[in-house]
Image (cartoon, rainbow, N blue to C red; front, side, top):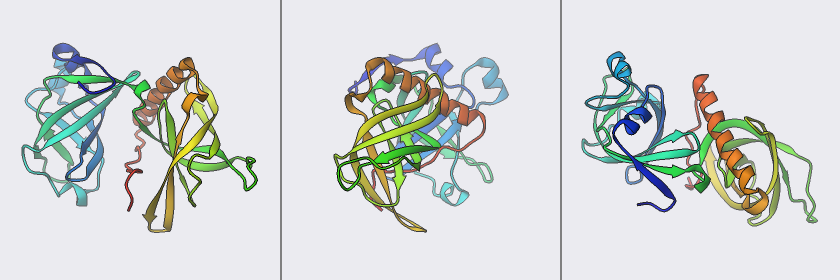
Length: 248
């Protein structure tokens, strides 16, 4: 059992989780695969409220990347986001669809492990937030707009055009959160990872909230993040596919 896990689900409960259109995150460290997709069930499977034979995942990746398919049998870590938690299971890869479809077929999982979102699983959200940074004399400058990469109950990560001092304080303002409205809180900078882009070097800044949020505020935040992610998916908006912990 993994640290922070809560319960294993299987049978009908697992089938109910594997719904058509559910967002899935697929990871495999050795092949550097880290991608998002949605579960795709046939009309018959939707009527039966369960996939059969194989798990079909429509990947949100370019065709040029899709053609580099893995070997059959390679094990992938999969994560599905549910209300207040993330479900984890490991399954082997089977095969891929013919183009122009970008579908992977995976083995059906026999069980899934539920991990509470309060254990700070990151959820990618494409939106703008405001941050207030430390000044040269220890003060805080005015708020500035930056691009959010991801957020969790424990912190967030955003894009910045220059590195920031590790362990320095920061104020953040995240707008339009369900149940919360605008989240305005403080944190500490824990990471400044350089990322090479076509426009030059940028930095992914990791922020930890620490004890600035009460337990109730943190619970509201993780529920809000889940609802926000689902609203983006329902609108057909893409979530970013960025590994902000890896140096280019």
